[in-house]
Image (cartoon, rainbow, N blue to C red; front, side, top):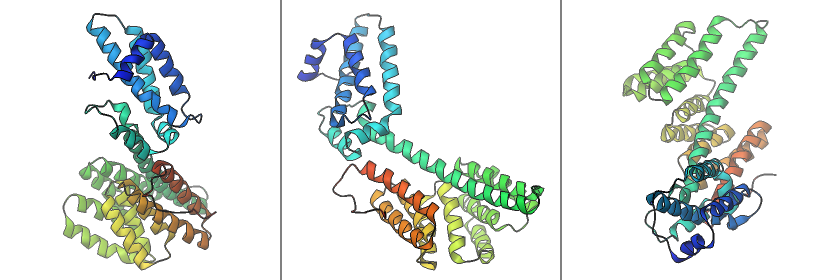
Length: 327
């Protein structure tokens, strides 16, 4: 919807035609990531001006098919580079401050690039967690295959397939189908601890808390430690978006083993998705320290990458915790 123009925006319209404004927009967007800093903020009011002028001209019967195509393309590129834009101008806090300084009560989507970038980051994190779980399972399958001369038995494949399907279906809310996938896996591998944890998790999602508790009580002793059980269930909860339950289980794992680097890593993941970046940074740093002492170089790298993304998103906010990653 068109917005009322202020004096600077009206002066911008008068300074050049619509074509010139669109060309300037393309140029500014192409410079995102080149170190232009807060100068990139010129993009947002320029979009307002172009949007206003196009709607004014369309209201007068003008044919702007070519200009609309150029404008839509520029907007699509800007959406795609939302995270780069936020980093360019100094972080999400800077974008929010600039948005709050606007006098209009109606702002277009481009004034919310920080929120768009955050949603994309959250989706990417969930995908990464699912892939991480898949890699762990795949490694187990490959080890088993190697031990059996590269001929994995059908039950190994059935187990892997059941866990993957259960996670995907439960994450999309198809609990009945998810439970069916787990039961099919348990028919192939009766008593498999990881499948039984998924069984309990899905029963809980369906409101069968007593049945879920019974399964958890039974399968808990199948794990080498309480920490291992809680971390397994925490990972499952995280994959399907049950962040509060995931955080509770990571806390339980850490209580069982205060040196649990993986526990702090999963805790940080849950806190990050739940939009508590300060707590997440502290948890990731703890994971780095513990993993470093344990010689788990892979986990050190994973946690440092997560910290890097969070620190970029913080944009130098003074309320961010003072965390210095281990070199």
